[in-house]
Length: 360
Image (cartoon, rainbow, N blue to C red; front, side, top):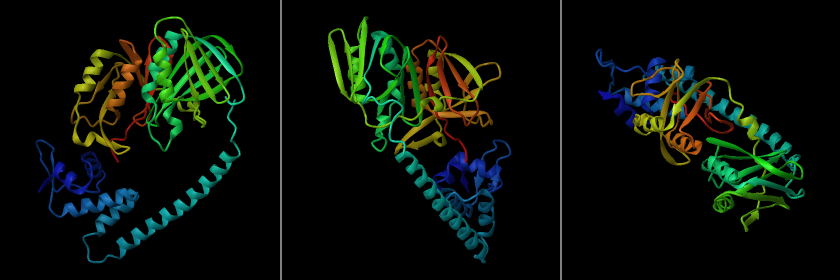
């Protein structure tokens, strides 16, 4: 007999996935301990689990997976072969349709080469508080991406409109937004994506008080403060529409004391099945539950309730640090919705963490 952990290790299925397939009646353990509820699997179930893992990776619908596993032990392979072939045809049809849709989208992008207001043709000059700009960059810089395949996400968006400058960073898995009021704005609305190294050079100049002068013209951005200046080219890409990405469903809100909550996150459960891979690197999850009394807790081992939401633990800790407050508000609309980390006194500065699915 194999324990659930051993079967997970030998088959390539996670423990949470095995629990899901048990509840779904797809791969039911040979024995369940009546006292502890622990699952045990027979020797013949290892092959079934490995078959299930392959079908899962291929994206076969659960109804067909049930039929494949039910027919697998039999001598007649006709049904299994038919199901595999039918799923392969669906995948090929779906891929062909996806290629057509992507081709149409690429054509639309080709016709939409000009940004809303190009920093290459419009000169924009802003005067801002140096400490407030420094605080805004500190609130978003942690979320900038590092994927060479997506260079536009390797910078910070500077969005100048009216009497405010909004700075935004995202790496697909999280997004951070901060807003700074301006003391003076010359020129139209403009957006510029500032490379991360230049953003860091700007931040290094913003010490002490006083004001800072930000200029965007001819595809270049410059920052001057206290007689010092740094400048460089903007990234030649259009940043995604962050306003659409930050419209979140209404949900539960919980105000937390950051030092106490940080300790709970740092010392919370870190089970094997709560470890994932992202861009080739392993990371741990923090599984949160928003309670009816307006609180939020880090779920303990064995807590498998339906209203949990999981996020990258390191990202959550970085968001708490970037929040720069002793108390922050956590907000979530559903287990499949992003988690927002907000400041109680500043609705324009916040970060958003994408959820991680716990089960199949």
